[in-house]
Length: 244
Ligand code: FPP
Image (cartoon, rainbow, N blue to C red; front, side):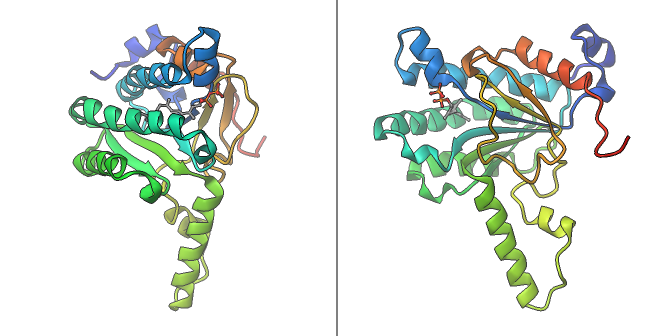
């Protein structure tokens, strides 16, 4: 169900001041678990549970793109046991939620290099991408083994190849087309939970003019209400894009 203007107003939101592209660094699963005397795996599970409401709200509010940082290229440094938990959660998530996401017309795009993941993870995410490829609703980017420097390098190499083959000198549009996010609007709102003031190699090109929303809330506590608060804070910012 899509919200009409009146329903959005009930959340304190107005359609014209919604971001087109929201990105989130989902941080604090481990600390959330520790604070409750639970295993880190319980934090990751609780963090995964949060996705449903956020995706649903983004879709219903007709936000165009939602990009979630699920696994960074630096996350390989974690103990094997934790990596295994994250992999099983990914497979479980994409297997269990795919029907509902598809029914909501969500289009899933994996950004990052999935070649290093175990075969069952690769299969689950590729199936999800293929199955939803024609959907015209919310574009949901899931960053897996993603790093922005690697993405930019990949794009630069692609442009070099095109140039070497006789193509023109690339401009900004050509570089954008060579990124994983080709065809999508730039990030308007970047959310980071658990109070860290870092970008952590996420979407460096795409966040050039993004508004940052940092909250001390740990990711598993980032409810729909917290999301709405972030969207309201975004609406209250005066964006000038370098102008006056
Ligand atoms: C950061 O918390 C979170 C991660 C490294 C993983 C994020 C993954 C999920 C929310 C679930 C899987 C995603 C999908 C799409 C199914 P942390 O472990 O760094 O927390 P800490 O900084 O408190 O230790």
